[in-house]
Amino acid sequence: MPVSRIIQFGYRRHPDQDRTAADAARHPVVVVGAGPVGLTLAIDLAQRGHDVVLLDNADRIGDGSRAICFSKRSLELWDRLGVGERMVEKGVVWKVGKIFLNDDMLYRFDLLPEDGHKMPAFINLQQYYAEAFLVDRASELPQVDLRWRNKVVGLDQRNDHVVLAIDTPDGRYHLKADYVVACDGARSMLRGFVGAEFSGEVFEDQFLIADVKMTAEFPTERWFWFDPPFHSGQSALLHRQPDDVWRIDLQLGPDADPAVERLPENVRPRIERMLGHANFDFEWISIYKFQCRRMQRFVHERVIFAGDSAHQVSPFGARGANSGLEDAENVAWKLSLILRGDASATLLDSYEIERSAAADENIRASTRSTDFIAPHSAQERRMRQAILRLAKEAEFAKRMVNGGRLSTPSVYETPLSTPDTDVWAAGPRPGAQMIDAPLAAANGEPVYLTEAFRQGGGGFVLLQAGANGGDQPGCHSIHIGETAPLRDAAGLFAKRYDVSEGAAYLLRPDGYVAARFRKPTRKTVEAAIARASAQT
Image (cartoon, rainbow, N blue to C red; front, side, top):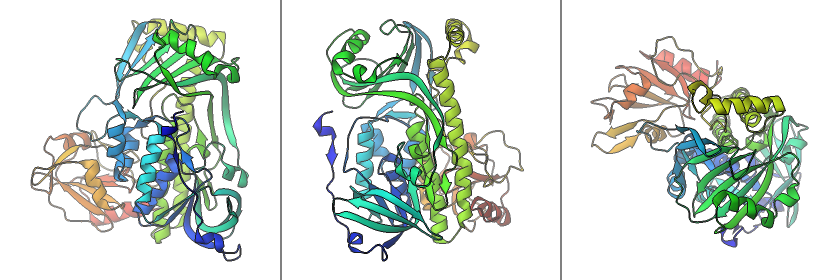
């Protein structure tokens, strides 16, 4: 790993460390773990006006590229937090993938075939860049108190707060918090402190990750091979990253010795066979096994778990980091309402409902991918080979080929949604994520719907078709129409949302649809906001 990739942060003593355990400082929220999920959560809460202490037991970022595929949904979240454009500018934008059997392409897919979205379907960006950009953003927000080399070594739940014991280079101190959010990864210490364990499946097949630096003319696409000629009987994946770095995944099988396989002198011949040349250098090498596991409960009184500390999936499909970022946004707006006194703590029950269902969905998709990529038995392998052979000619078989279904936004079956009472031919239903669309301001300035959503200041937003109807209490209204402040210049908002004059969509603070109405009234909007805030 080149030294230039690593950013070191200095430890700083905080005045909280001068206080006794009995007189420990109390904060509204303490987030544990300054990875992408913890940083995103802290920034989101800060932008909603809340002070956050963010603790991390390390003091640097840059140890390997790790997660690299970030979805449109994640980029829209980061754009709201002020870092989305920077991520896209540095990242490698892609939307096309190809699946091969041997040297033959079985099919290609396009993850975003239509225009009119601010953010691309996916970018590839090394995790150390994403973390660095998030740290930069956090440093701009005085509400975020980021403390490096602060390791949580104890946790005590009280009636109305949590007490944390924290080790630092200067010794141990204590903090009190109204809420603690554990974003401390797959080996979460906090999970052990609340007496919770993972349940699920660890797959035996092992996979090699090699990030190699080279100059190549391959197109910017996701390439996945079954039984490639350079890696007979196994699978392989190729992805481009910034800085002429390429991610290569090679299936090794269950019997491979990880200590031997990760040695550069043993990895190099494998990559040379794949590329047909030796003109490359290693950036990072790792061995991993698929794991599809989760906690039974994500909320333990005043301790909330998010990201890999709560659930794990295999990396094929880019569901790990992207799902964790959805966790962060989901818990951020709910904690914000609770801390402001605009909702009771029972709102966190919906975090449990929504994000545990999302974890189950991701685990199912990830398990199916894993079962197809690494069959358990000879019978399953024969079935897979038959599907792959048929896929060359038959459309139905192409749909059965699974080289990792890519991450998509979750759709919630949630008590926070107000069921439809009107008929809709299109548009995101209650519990689904908003869809972007190109708009124009009255002066002709282009603006995207996701950008207009930010005008809501982190609260509920009512999208209203037409200039009439007036503002509704408890939310920020955005009017879209020929004589409204925003114009549907390309007609895509009307098409994607199936709106007629006067129709409206109520969006939650995370951009999910809480309700939609053909003819909204003050009473129906207020009731939907109350329901989405768990007040009814």
